[in-house]
Amino acid sequence: MPSSENGTEMPSRVLVVGCQDHGGGLAMLLKHLLGCEVRVAYNADSATQAARELNAQVALIDTGIPWCNGYELARNFRGSREFSELPLIAISCYSSTPYRDLARQAGFNGYIVKPYGIETLREALATAGGQPMRPIGSFPNAKLPPERRPVS
Image (cartoon, rainbow, N blue to C red; front, top):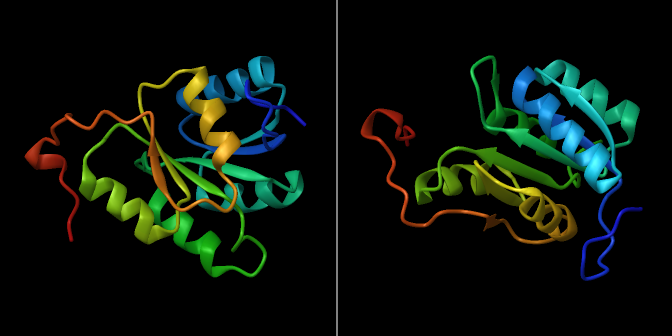
C-alpha cells in the first residue's frame, strides 16, 4: 500500500471519475507517482461498475463534468449499501463555501480545488477514510463568479 511522506498508509485502489483529459492525467499521477492501482470512469454507470471491479478504497470525483453530476453520484454512492462507506473526495475548480457545502451535503469526505499538486493528492488520500469533510488545497480568497453560483 502506498504511504504518505509522514508514513501514513494511503489507499492503493483509487477510482477516478472525470473527463477524459483530467481523469486520464490524474490516473497517470496516481499510478506513476504514488503507486496506486487506478480505474477511470467518465459517467455514473461506469463509475459504479469500476468501483465494484476495482474494489475501490477511495473515489476522486470531479464535480464539474457536464454529463455526470458529481454531487448526484456521491449521493448515489452514499445511498447504496455497497458504497455507503467508500471515502469520496470532490475535485472542483471552485473554492467558495457554497460549493464545499454542496459537497459536504452530498456525502464527500474531502474537497480538492484545482489546480492542485501531487502533495495535495497525497494528503487527500492519506486522510480520506473516516474523516469529516474538509477542504484540501483550497484557496479561501477565491471569488465565485455570479453565473456559476450553485442553486440552493
